[in-house]
Length: 197
Image (cartoon, rainbow, N blue to C red; front, top):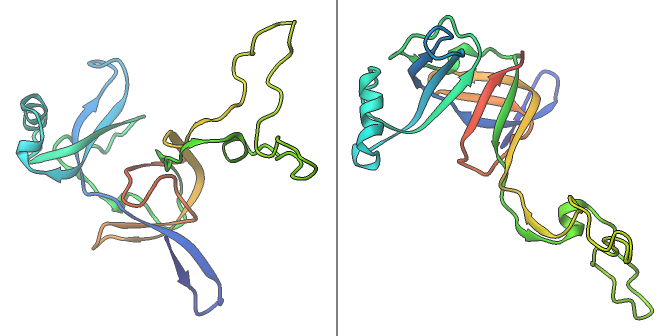
């Protein structure tokens, strides 16, 4: 993330800089052949030895030269998608509304205060219930803990979709998208950017 200063208005806009593309079109799914509409894109070029033989064959069969680490399918109708060609940041314009999906930052094993925003207990007069979750169910009835009870456990590292984000500007020469605000995931994490329908 960084900030962009507008000299005319004097406003500061927080933006996230995203390297987006070029992404070769590996396959175009159609209802007649595949039963649904989608386009499959490749991302992050790597050495051939880092892919299995079937993965390299899938890319070569569809007219994509080189090896790519990630393959992602985007559902929907993409009439302009042509197999073998590349999708670049030129498909976006400043002011477009997008939704960005990614894997959130993993926080490891966390307690209920951090994970579920529980309130803490009293910290004085010998209380031993400072950061504990408190009661998790009744005793005799139903004499078990209900499913879905909020407890301590693994936090983060799950798929998050941030909707309603706005594209601030597009740098075609360097394949960069500047999106207003924050997006899910760590630095150098992989993101999926879709237009808001």
